[in-house]
Length: 168
Image (cartoon, rainbow, N blue to C red; front, top):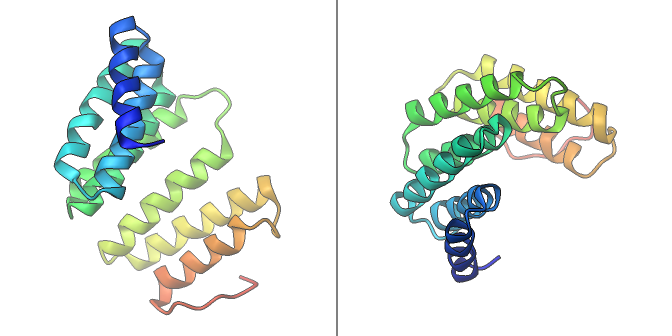
């Protein structure tokens, strides 16, 4: 989705009172603007819109998604305490789901592991990365394309050496 089409869609959905679509499009704009275009200040503005819409519809999973997206933008801004708070709140919201999605939990664990690595908490980062790998492998299988990618991230997080391995 392009930047301009996301903005038009956001305002159309907002005017029409379509809160789920408003939240989804604002979340996409957080990613497009805050990460891809590297305009984190504007990305944070879209995050406010996305959070407000998610809270208006009362969807904790959508709110958790927005918080994880905002955490990524905060990491780009080197706001690690803000990113940690967003990720922690997202994990709490994910935990309220009666049937939690293992892939969503794996993504949250990976994001928190990356944050812990930046904070210099390597043992905690490694444990979170391993948890993410186990969750993904349990759902997708050990040979799925994203599982080796997760293993590679674990290696970089624990050793700082970019190398690909086929087993852990």
